Image (tube, rainbow, N blue to C red; front, side):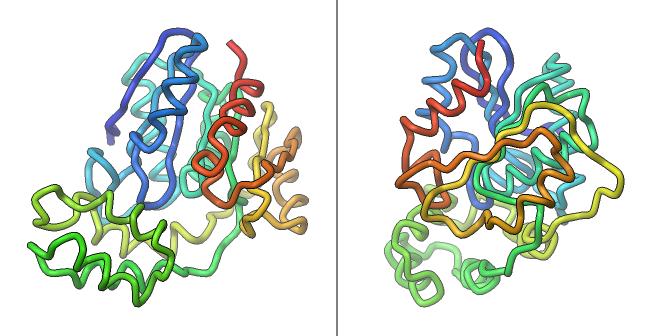
Length: 251
């Protein structure tokens, strides 16, 4: 599968992978800043997201394979890779299964563990929205299962402009939620390259007890916490997160 890509800049390649319900253009400001510093920054739409192809099922091995196929199709045999949340798990899987493609790895606010599937009620509510429902009504309907207005606004970026439905592959996402929230064992695999695991100060996604498992897979992992950030570290503290990426992936 060849994924949709948004590219900017020239120089050493840096790949950005977004999280669940996100899309490549969410990294717009970050991508512009990193590209201005002398990098070829490639932001990818993950399967069933943005303008990338839809698939009936998606797990981290399939996502990693799609990222690898896309990079090679673009003439990128090796790149620094940053992934957030679901994209962070896909980036970890890419590093573990295709380490020759990953020069260094930055994982943003996710661990290689299974998480409770908090998104099931929201996905079911999204699936139940009739075509043609105005945005305001969709927002009101989703509020019963997602009280956070910021999260709902993020979700609503996936509505088609004509209100005819969702642009994302919602059925494939729904079918894949157990795999997305889980983690596939990679017995005997380890990535020896430079690895930075970034957590948001106010996020519960990376716990102290996750660190031994992370180091077992990524022996050179370092850990950093961004003050004042929650799970969406790059959005909550854009300047601080961009500085972290610039320092970890120098030109």
